[in-house]
Image (cartoon, rainbow, N blue to C red; front, top):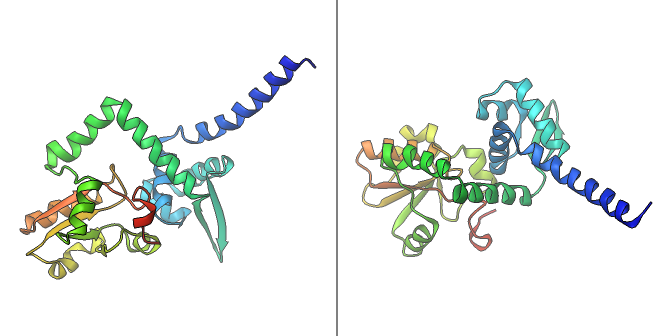
Amino acid sequence: MTEQRTNRTFKDAVYEHLATVGKALSSSTRLEILEVLSQAPRTVEAIAGQVDQSVANTSHHLQALKKARLVTSTRDGLYVIYSLSGDDVAALLGQLNEVARRHIADLEQLSQEFFDAREGLEAIDKKTLLERLRHDEVVLIDVRPEEEYDTGHLPGAVSVPVNSLEARMADLPRERTIVAYCRGPYCALSAQAVKRLREEGFDVYRSDVTVSTWSDEMATP
């Protein structure tokens, strides 16, 4: 075999492996599954509920992600628990989001129409939020499900799951500004919480920061 042929065989094999990851990421449902798992490990049944898919379809997508080594699974009694195979997978998802936001105008427009124009809920950026937290100017609430908060949350954040918001509203300070965050730039939980709290007269804003995009030195395990 010639050296050129050997090089070609090597490159073909390398890019075939890389394509396995690319193929796994080519499904919108699988991308959403990765976002869900970046928050906390879950059973296939729980994932199916989060992404609005049947258990059978969700299991099929999980197998594709597992084949690409993007997720792993462990058995806990009768249940199989899925999780990301590493923090680098969450970082890859975050980088994909950033590249798409910078280069696909339709995506940014869609986000603005949903949050800014329709709801008037433009997000406070990370730099502004950090500055206001350092000066103790805001109360930070995490409106994700409790198990996601328990897995990891921003420092000083109080867990107020959106489905418990009505019951927890009396505990929130009306004399201070509140900032709500959830899973990231395309998660509507914080927008839902902000809209409801504003209806009750709270001074409240949303932020699209996430646990995975917050700096390592500021993250709470």
